[in-house]
Length: 470
Image (cartoon, rainbow, N blue to C red; front, side):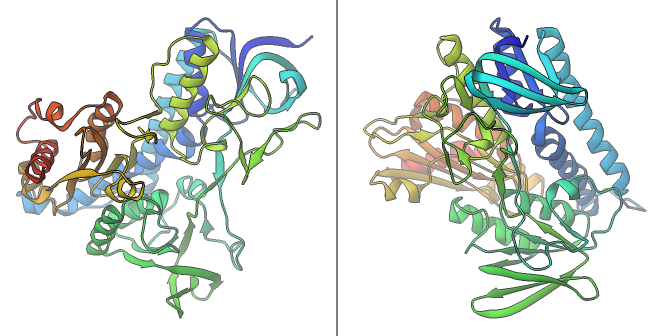
């Protein structure tokens, strides 16, 4: 006889474990099916390990400039194997914390591969065989997998995706070509540039970071170029060959070009992961590989929901976690504690309250809409901008620049968007997300004092700039 749960979640990443913890806290009998380690891609092969390496490499980069601050170091070196060991300790500490919460809340963690059958029955293949479960509600949170393009040479040794690169033990990255200038690509470029690698980025689009604000992308490209990273935008990769290393052959503006390196990182996006997920007796609606969901994240099958990368166009860990919370609260019939979007005054369109953070040097963080997007939908806006080159903390830290730009509705003066490029931008963006969700105006934001000297003073200066323009 199958075990019955109030909620069964397939996938133990940020969306899955957040939903499980929320559901168990509300008294639901909850289980999570995970085929690998608890934490999913984000914890084990993505966000946490990447940021751990970014932190370690940034320390090494700072040491190279320490003489500017009157600090002398006679010998300076890094041990990549020890960096990887430090990364693993961070991952294990984070995972242990989640496991303790599962244990204290009585959440069942089932190790195996799940297949959904009709009437919310779930078949799980484990090391011991097959097990069967029933659930009143099911959440699919299986995430996404790295995409590998179909081009000649993709199978050559030394052509890696981010999962394999993060698992590397030995240093073999004196020269690395990164194909793809999205978030993963530019963060990896930052890591290896900090470790003195010769780094090249090949981006097919006309600027880095895809759909992100063009001024933000242009500022980042200037910073990466200043640090010695070669950036080719509008570069279409044709093939990879082996000739005294790996050679990437590409075209740019109709011109044939090539770049040689010891390693090639393919960072061209991720695709929803649904392999083996659907049984023969059940069908789900999909679009371009993503599960189709309604506003409440329910799939085409009743009481089966999907969250995170398997269905959402925005592939971010905190988006999956927020969606998981939203779905559990919907199932429990309680008021929602999180806003996924807001409707600004005088507009029918919804504003996304989704912070996007990129851990480059300097950091980049955005939320809401850009000036260009607002004007494209006919919204009149008022923008305030402040160059961080005049910020006291930036001067103390010998930072080159960056900026804070805030976008306000021209009539209500409500904040509708923010773009920040400076150190600690990823921490500062939380204030802006809260302001958009709460419908705060420029005047209300300006009422709070910001400590001196801090990077967040730039927010106040950008608000002042908007008042001057008004």
